[in-house]
Image 1 (tube, rainbow, N blue to C red):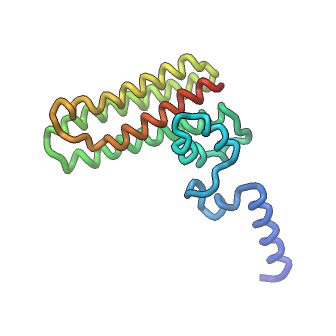
Image 2: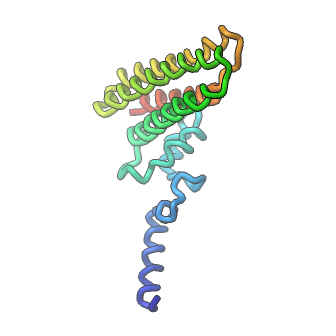
Image 3: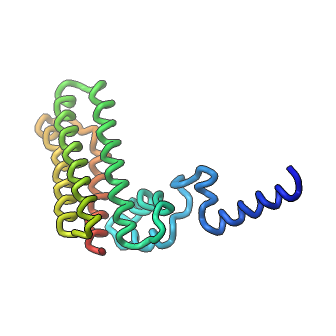
Length: 182
């Protein structure tokens, strides 16, 4: 590499560093790095700020303007993705558990599918800044995945989805708080 090319690469790295894109260019986006200060400030006003920062903060580079609406969209997107991960976990877990738990997991899968639908409705409402509808849809989503625990309790067996349900509940509460801020 010649001196002119080396300077160009160094200049590009410095430019990326100053614009906050170097971690993403190195493949370190969302990997525990620093969270955009604007995202962190908005997330600090939610009931679960660390959850907000660790999930919404990963998407900050996708938004040209960071405001309450952008962070809400980031958090709802993360909520949707985590719900999809919960459904994948249901499929994986149902192969290795006793029949009573497997039957309860089938119910959970239905509830997570309903959650995905209501998150989609919330996302559409947010697009139109219809906070009332968005909050109702997010509350319905909470009810859906909260229902997942019921068949496990009735059968007297542990719920393998407890960790997911807790995280989803925290994300949903953050979303509802952020919806109140737009």
